[in-house]
Amino acid sequence: MNVRDYYFTAKGIQDLVDTERNSPSYSQSLPRRLALWRRGFLSRAGVIYDFERYDPASFVNNYQRFVRTKNLNGTWSIALSNKLFFDWLMRAYGDHRMAVHGLVRDGVFHEFDDTHEPAPSAVAGDETATLESTVGSRAVARRGAGEWVADRLDADGKLVLKWIMGGGGENVLLCSRTADGYEINGDRYDRDALVARVDDLENYLVCEHVEQGPYSAALYPETPNTIRVLTMYDEAAEEAFIAAAVQRIGTDRSGSMDNFSQGGLSAEIDVETGELGPGAQLPDESDHLEWHAHHPETGARIQGTRIPAWETIRERVLELASSHPMLPYVGWDLVLTDDEGSFKVIEANDHPGLKAMQVHGPLLTDDRVRRFYERHGVC
Image (cartoon, rainbow, N blue to C red; front, side):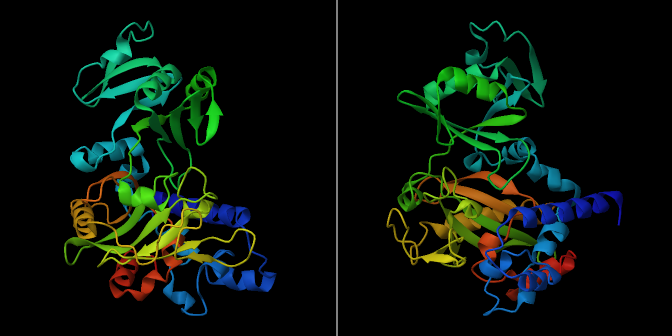
């Protein structure tokens, strides 16, 4: 084991312990929790996973996920964990790339312009836009970050600000223009407060807001409802395959995001047909999972609904994954932009969480998935 492996092991164990400390135990007894810990599971797994129906050994346990999957992509993991690097990776796939306008750093907005020319809106009439430099092949113009974001919101209506590192919906700011001001993740701001909030950010990317298509919006229009696709690369077959996929759906409990951990729904996608199963939801006040054939607020049908043009989406994701064999393990987050198979990749995850997938059943019952994890020393 080299220094890098030691680092990721130590970091994974720390994250595992911190997650256990900050997660609900759902009133499980101490002996029950000890039994789960001995098998490598967090306490919450006793409620989330169906251990009565499935052998616990058929699940990727929490220790394996936090510690052993953390370095599956090796030195190439930076291409996924750093969102700016990932944007560079996706520039070859313009149809599926979410536009990144620039970077907030030290209270300054560094604008990326794909035409290799300084963007007029960034320099005209602004005394702060006096320094230009180049990031890769991109021209960059600098001005106050908060003012740029406020002006762009006035023009476009919505933006997404993401910390350059991190995942799981953390440090994501959904910004919008309202009739009487602005909102960030549902909280109201006037212009001065918005400018101050943005100026205080460090290393945040300013991205386009991707509008979801009719299918996704019908599920729950208040959040982007993303599809998470977990791909693995089969070295023997020299191709990627889909290990699992889920439709994530926002709820009133999940706020501005669709994250399962925050109270959103996770519906299993039949990889062959694109048909959804029922939506699972983490316990709120009870100690039992909730299952929804229809959305609890909108009433939209979930179970039995088929994703439009799923075959097109599936094959395109497999093309993306197969084109990057140096990244054998990726959790792709997609926003469907129409009902014809078009989508944007808003994020790709280096060591994606598995509870939203394994709540529907263990991953290791699939022989191809098990072989992948065994080959990479996960189980």
